Length: 487
Length: 95
Image (cartoon, rainbow over all chains, first blue to last red; front, side, top):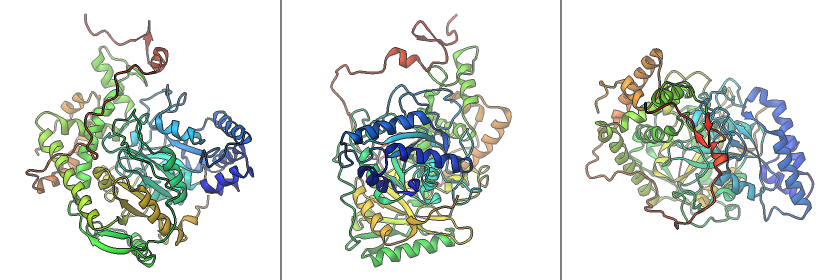
């Protein structure tokens, strides 16, 4: 069946004219009809627009366009609900944006279109990307394809679930503290967070501007490499995007791990890791060693301060970024007698509980009298965390860790305890604070119930190529990426 | 880091968010727990450590001061909850 192909498998068939882009798009729509009633990954699908884009790709193919020139030509890719796509809604899974429709295409959207992708469907997320379970969506939760009672992770939970349920050939998400890697781990796909500055943030609704980064969720490492290649690069419209060359990520794949030095951070292998996760991780380390990697224990002494630092820095930035949702220029408005009460009413009604919690926390840590004690101190600890990475990378090429300490939890389990929810991001958060790159890929399953386990590899800044190469070598030597959830 | 004096009404007001009494109670307790947790950072000696606002040190990223295309006024106003005469309509600010 067409929907079972990888992104690269589909691209090869499109390039050979064995299938049409319309057939591929229709296969995704049929699959959505068959399974999304149970998975709820998609918030909306503009079918006419999707099929129109597919027809345009077919027309280009008929005129001789190739996948060497446009690697994603005719490939259906879904988008997290926070990308600005001209004429389409972008709700960020929040009520506050009302019937907003974006007046322009963001840079990632434009680049993916240039590469030929058919961008269709808005997938669910935690409201404004704040959460680790996709339960904070104002439009209902998304279900983990491996066990519908469980969460898909978050905040890019809709992306991960849609890829794993084979409703699209890849999905684009964002990662502020693990929001690509954590759902990829809990759903069993590959999720890549590029280095800060690698991919433009222009046209992406901001959560925490010094941490947010756009990246792909895909069925395997090669698919991730193709998607990253299409999106990466300097953008004059994002002054934080970095003007460095984008290598050919696909050409860099292949080979073993001979001579690669992998660091095992002692502080990540804490008590409290689920035994199934620990066993799968230990096995993955052995596999890397068998493939030729040298394993070195390293120390990252400030790891335990990552979550506390993150929840000060990220909420402070969020409180500033989300000030724009004021009911004046776009989104839903709840009236008041004066502008002040209009703002308070609009935001009180429009934002969900987690978003309010974070804006209020962020406002507090920036407020007069508390700035030094909280925000400034967190910024200094952030420096210490970054130094941990710099020191580790002096002796190793990349770090390997479990992505998440435990497999997917049941819906509702952590909703009343935000702190426990935050702690599920303990292994993914430091990478964002340091601004480096990371990938999560499947490395096994728990026994009963059968749930995916993720292996995280963290690389040096702008060394996504090496990260993908290591991940690819491991993936090709193991069977995990071929496992499919039964729906 | 004193969190005992955390005044939910004051901070919610600064953030321009109206809260119900139930929300005030719940958020106050939860934020108290979270602030208790972040006290962990006090364990570290950060004397002489430079604060870090950004992962990639870049400063003064400027472009040439040239007019570039942007969205039309019509498109910019299309999402406004209320608009008239090419303007956003807001409640009266001055008497």
